[in-house]
Amino acid sequence: MKHRGNDSSRSSSVKVLRAACRNELSSAMPATKSRDLSKAVSTRGQCQAQLTETETVLDELNRLDDEANVFKLIGPAMIKQDPVEAKSNVGKRLEYIKSDVDRLEVQIKSLETKLQAKQAEVMKMQRQQQQQQQQQAP
Image (cartoon, rainbow, N blue to C red):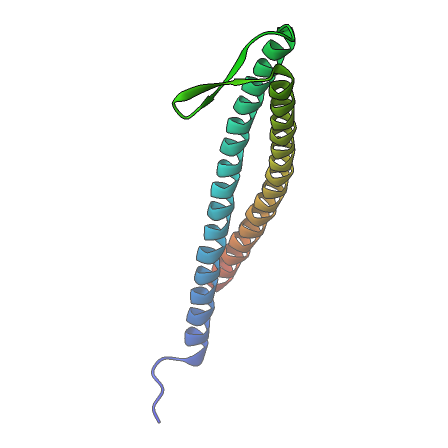
């Protein structure tokens, strides 16, 4: 059986190919985590906007007299609602939105930590690959 080329050059080619594949996979991971982070930050922004709006509604409801007329838009119709019930509903919604914002804050911190760890791992792998290439250079 005849061998073409020498085994050491074939072995080094395989190592370079494996390193390139690892780099490609590793660089894809931070991009995915970065997209997840961007999505979480965007969602947090939307929740904070809802939070501000809901706080404004609750503030306005608190300024009303107990006998004031309060209406709620349901579909195309305006339905009369008890002011106490309206305050209660808005208060519950406010609590729900605050819990969502808190949950998103935790998620964002976690994603940032994971992204930084992946980026450090990718940089380490790239340095190792560069060192291997420098060692193999004639």
